[in-house]
Length: 399
Image (tube, rainbow, N blue to C red; front, side):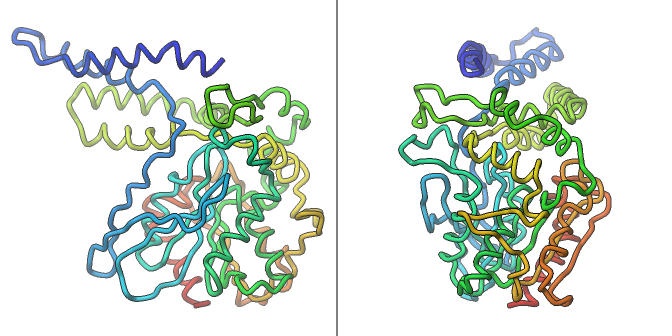
């Protein structure tokens, strides 16, 4: 139904773009009416979602006192995701950091700002997840266990002496992966683990997101938000949780704010304030780029992480074996929370400190950033100026 509706309004967007390209300023035509008309056409042309990964847009980065060119390099390519490295043209070796991006309806490019900051002092890799609608059925299933397996594989690609930083939902899988690697004495076990705004124990300060996931039985989610990929896509027939459903849920939480931002965008376009309009368009170009999740990963995440809190209760398993965070003895732990986070409540991430009971006190640190919401924990001014120095120092202390 969604795809059909999008197909129906596609000609409207095309017409708006055509109108923009053919609307020269006519003499005698009222200037204010012209500006309102072009603003309306541009708003109409933007009435869409994208299902393709946007560009990271990191062509160069400031390292010390010079601007260094940056290129993307695929280090490991697997069916549901690839390990992407941001290679910089420098000779000085720096700590390797794996950034674990959420698989929650948006592409990993949502963390482009996080990566850009980390690149000042680190050799950065990221889990670049693929859109499930583009993964053929013969690639098999991808659930929570497969996610953990991918993280272990990616950390092994980085090799000994690396660090890991997880944002939001994959904090659970990251802690599980490090616990498994620690118990197996895997030489690629990371030296430090930074967990940022993740639902390690959703029983702590439950948010509206947690309550929604907990109040309905798993069958409700299976019947109401899971659909099959339409025939014309490479993943035709795959059961998925569509990205547009997740986006709708996120927007519903702050609909007034999103409406106000689009009214502001229209006003900027009318006033000819290109720079201010560009900032809003840039954010929503990223925000409206959505990916589908495999049904098994979504449903397992709801059931195992949000309903049962398996990691916090000691019931989390990986391929049939019990995961024991107490096995982590040599990986430094940093947890970060936002004081105004309405998605991951206070205490949900810092719960990792109790789970990692074998870690000595000097290997544990918690940072609570006042007056930032969920997004501000890993992006924006306070991430850049106040949270990142804590992350950098944690990595340096173990390198």
